[in-house]
Length: 124
Image 1 (cartoon, rainbow, N blue to C red):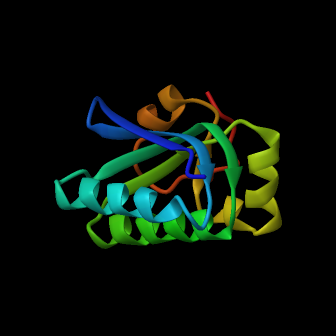
Image 2: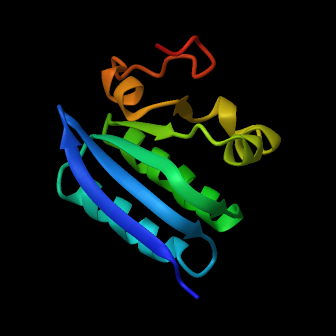
C-alpha cells in the first residue's frame, strides 16, 4: 500500500520538499518525479525534509542520490533534514552520510551557505 505524502514550500531561495510516510520500491517513483519536476521548474537549492518518513529503502536512497547529482549538474545544492536515528543509521551504514549534507532542522539547512560544507560540522 502506497503511503507517501509530498508537499513543497519556499524558504528564502530554497525549495523545501516535506516527505512523509514510506519511501520504498512502490513510492520512490513518485518522489523521483517530484524532485525532477522541481529542478525542471527552476529550483536550484532543494532541501528534502525526511522528518515524517517512517521507512526508507535502497530505492529511496537511489532517488535521493539521483536528485543530488541532478542538482550538482546545474550548480544547485541539495540538503537533507534528518534527525531520526533509524534513518541516520541507514545513511551511516551506506556511507551516504559522507555524500549528503545532513541537517537537524529545515532552518539549519536553509541557512547553510550552499557550498558543500562538511555535513559532520557542528550544527547551529
